[in-house]
Image 1 (cartoon, rainbow, N blue to C red):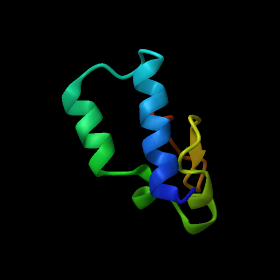
Image 2 (cartoon, one colour; image 1 turned 90 degrees about the horizontal axis):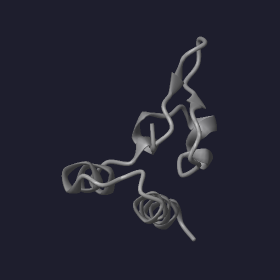
Image 3 (tube, rainbow, N blue to C red; image 1 turned 30 degrees about the vertical axis):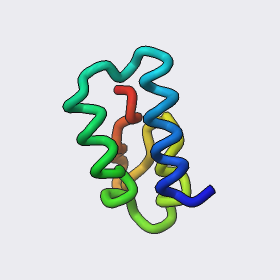
Length: 65
């Protein structure tokens, strides 16, 4: 499964679990993956539902947050 497929699977799981309900948010997450905002070493973890380090003590939020 490639990264786009993993990202879409994560979105589908979050919708099924009730974390994502707004059609506008779902559409936005479908169009823009957080992979675009991650440093290279974190990109392989983009589709994990967890905050990820973006260096210098900062994190990018979990998709459900």
